[in-house]
Image (tube, rainbow, N blue to C red; front, side):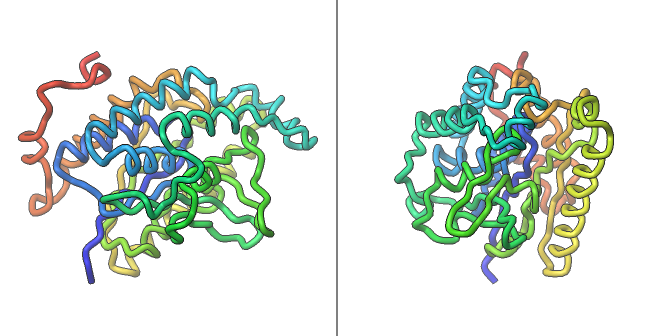
Length: 300
């Protein structure tokens, strides 16, 4: 079987900045993916890297995208107001328009197709609630990249579900927040999985809704992850699992801490690689490739 290294990027809203830092550490260690698979904010990160380049220049553009997301106030924290709009079907499309405008301005035009991406394969994962399965964009090279990333990032209550051709599509985190199973379907033989799930990040939501819904959401997400890890083991696919967390935990909608989260993700990934088995440990490569010119957020 042909070897295929996949970077699997989970969902977690603004906490996705930690994945960007972790990706910098992985690339500096000389690790480059054959396949990028992302859910939700992980889909944005995977798409940015695939489109702008699996290199430091691509990462710099991705870092800049987080500043744009902060400036645009992409996800308004006033949950009750937005949730009420969703329930009453008075959808607020501001977040959808903002996300779409940011992606198009960054060069991801509506007509850009998955088949046009060079040097790496990309897949984004949404949730098809009618079929009850993850919906993988990128299986068809004629799929629109913009449509794929927007579908994966339709987080209720900020984004209205997508209703198309008998499908009811929402954020991929509903069915596969850490999309290991989709990566296996796409031929991954080795996976580095960057998980953003943090039960502590639901604290602010608990103040609004009470503890039941946050605990339920967290339990479902953890169960999904465990089952997908077991599936990988059953298929003989090696998974290097990395949990990316900050203290205090950052809510989904809070992009203002992205600079600090870049640094946390970078340091977490660097420390994680040092614990990997010697025969596959990229630590020495990491030390050799450590950049003399560091990003501003790393030296802050």
